[in-house]
Image (tube, rainbow, N blue to C red; front, side, top):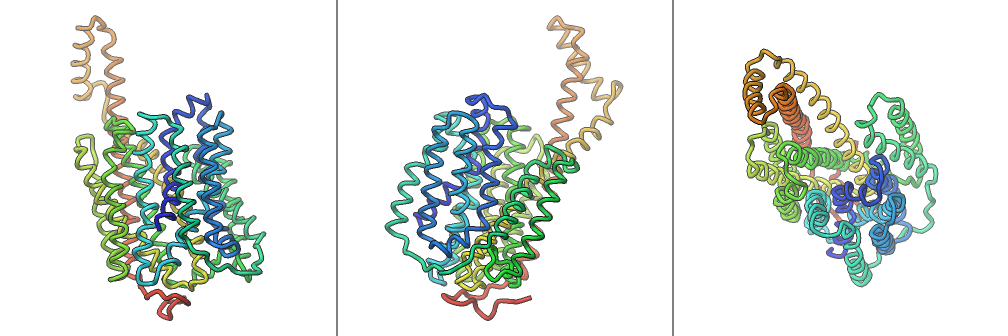
Length: 504
């Protein structure tokens, strides 16, 4: 478990920890924003393309062999990223990193599940879930510390010793698992899934910046929709599909995937919005923000295996409902954020929210996997991770778009109540004019007043917009809690899935 967890933690940490180093890379490589953003975008898109095929590769080459290969590629890519001499080189090496990292997520999830006896699978999946919930929250803290106090290239080179240790442990400790001989590669499915997931994820990533109604984004979305429709039709009629969409006939598995996706969307609302509030409104540095949010990451990491053990005893439903209810309660508290909210309060709300999320995701996922034939678990984990990847990108895209539009709305609303004769403006002009006169710049009073009032309006509009977005996030958490009421938890077996699994 430790050797597997080490690999997937590195892979998921590198999806967030690098964000903090982007400004530094722009300076070192003298690269414009539109080029350097591919350090992040290239990693995400490569993972999106590779996740669906991981189930086939695992069944064909064996879990242990594929994991060692993925860890080797990821570690080598990390070493090359640490040596990168230009933005172009960094982008190429990041894609190489993602080839290994993209395979490790569904691969290790499947291995955690299959290596453990049925009565301990909840605990095992809880440990695996640490990577999904803890790593994204801890990444900015680690990245901020490395960039501010050490060499930014350590973000990549630290993976080298960890990767070597993980490889040796995996080689010595992980048993071989059976493979399936004579499988046909679903080439058509791979082509259309690659085109579909690539264009969909890229459109979700770029939609806010380029405009959702722009011809470029509409063309990407049309290509994505067309490719994925063809992909679905092909998979439903393939004897050996790359992604076994027939698994969605299992209602419990489908419900578990849906709850996990909702959890991912809700989680990224906090990961995206709270740091934005702390840095933009409260003027904290990235390092200060990371340290403030670190207790939440720690609490989430602790609660994941605990919720896994509780799942083994009481099942998924009470954990999912209670976790989503806690997440809803704290999300609604975040709706009341303002410039006077104490930082200690933000830290506590965020920590309770993380605990709620940590109680939800892996119990729901394990409940779904328990209803799948053990021989199809590798395909089920690939399908689960593919849907979750799209859900996370969709969540960030929708929250970013709503945030920008609500900022414009609130700024216009606040500005409409201000004019040269309003009491607020008159009071500000009087005080600033006096200060300007004392400084020997009497004519600057009006200009300074306009700048300060404009800044205050934008700041308050930003806070009000974040509050609005948390209403949307609360809608997702409430939906997850309601769906959790219908979640059933049939006991897992070592062979075929139990008869208690629901079919539709």
